[in-house]
Every structure is written in C-alpha cells, then in structure tokens.
Amino acid sequence: MKTIIWITNCILGLLVSCAWAMQPSDTTNTTETQPEQIMLYCPQPEELTKDGPWWHVNNIWKSYNQSFVEEIQEFSGAQWIGVKVGKIICLYKGKEKLTFPVALEPVHPVLVPAPTGPNWITTEEGYKKCISDDVKDCPFTQQKPADVSNIYGQIKYKMKRINGK
Image (cartoon, one colour):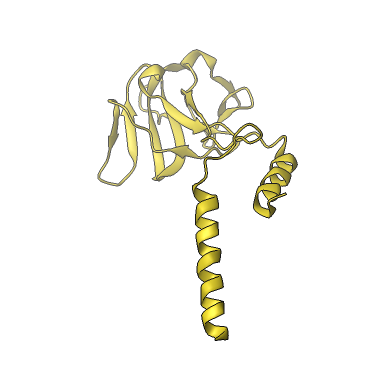
C-alpha cells in the first residue's frame, strides 16, 4: 500500500511540475531573452600604429608577433579559428615587399561565433577566412554580455515562483 501511495505522489508531483513549467511566464521582472549580437569589424588600416616591432590599435588590438613592416598598405582579410566559437585575426599588408602580413588579435580574448556571410569561406583545415581589402566585407559578431546588474533580484523573483510565495 505504501508503494502505491508513493508512486501516486510521484506522478502527482510530476504533473504539478509539468503544469507549472507550461504556464506562460511573467516577464515583467525578468530578462530571459537571448543576448543580442553585436556586429564588429577589423580596424581600418589607418588606425594601426607601430610601437617598436609591434602593431596595435589603442589598447584593443595588437600584434603578438614582431613585424618588419614599416607602413601598412591595406587590409587583406580576416581569419577565424575555432569550433562553433573561436577567435578572430585581422590581416594587413605592408608597403614593403617580401614581408609577412601583420596579424592583429584582440588584446582581451573574445569568443566569436563562427562568422557567416558571402565572403567567409571554410578551408579544408577547418578554419574560416575572408579575403578582401575592405573591413566591411568581413563582419563578425560577439554576443553582447548579459545584464547582471539585478542578478540577486532575479534570483529572489524566481525563488518566489518556485516556492509559490
């Protein structure tokens, strides 16, 4: 008899949980929306400055390899490396012949979803590249950080809904 009562209570508990979960949510006090995507681009070539053998754009982008390039001629494209999310590298040509391209990466690591668009192609190695002399041809996105300014209020509100108070 105790087993039947226990099974009945379990089934009723599941039904109540399912009914609660299926109710339309009151979103007046919560922000349960997906973070919006921010469209980003590599820096324009004229924004790059050289400090010794290193290239940078303010304190946002920098080269992690030394360069013999003395003057940037043009943007040459971008690369994305990752699996679903990864990092972006912006490439620039120097005016000097026989030099390696200048590769800029964000100073603070940023996870970038796999870029899409007509100019982004997937290589056999599995990374994506965009070849263009215009930074606007190689857009990429970053998720806008979620607003956590009222995180404790959101937790308190959700606990009220769970406890029914």
